[in-house]
Image 1 (tube, rainbow, N blue to C red):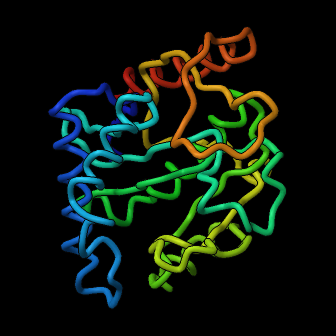
Image 2: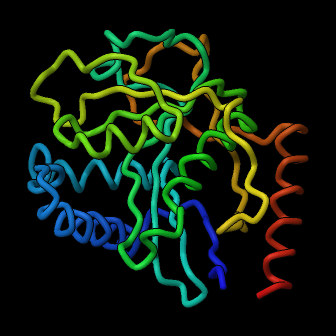
Length: 238
């Protein structure tokens, strides 16, 4: 039976910081045997990596998926604008609204469920509902060729390379959100619906990781009710 999972925006707490770091270290241990150097050392160092994770929490940009027992099983962070140093030479139109996914991790206990793929799709669909994102974009670890293939099979196309060769996650991919379908039987439901984030004025390139929250508009409130109905349906079936 498919487990009942819930996704919520992660609050800025020491516990959630430890949770994200724990998921990252679990993934690092697993990747060590996969012929890639991804996450084998905190980049560029542990202090700055942890500070980067903390910024995501403070900005409300990080989401955690939990099982019925409250255990974290997956996470993803999102942004409404690209990191300029990473995307400035991308072979795509950065003025078009997009959602940028970072730090996607699924615990090994849920490998094979398709949870990572659904989390990617959810990120794109939510960005589209929140502020009209037309693309979901992600920078992928340069040396992890298996991960490049994974995103390609998921419908992503290459859109360039980060010009700074020292940046380890420099392969750039994107997918049109119109190519994403809502799952018929979702693996997780969104229970908390805080204020959404909107892209900066002009929808141009920004150097920050995300943007400040704004109030929900009528269209998003309608989509929120849809997510609540989905969550209620899952609760009744659990």
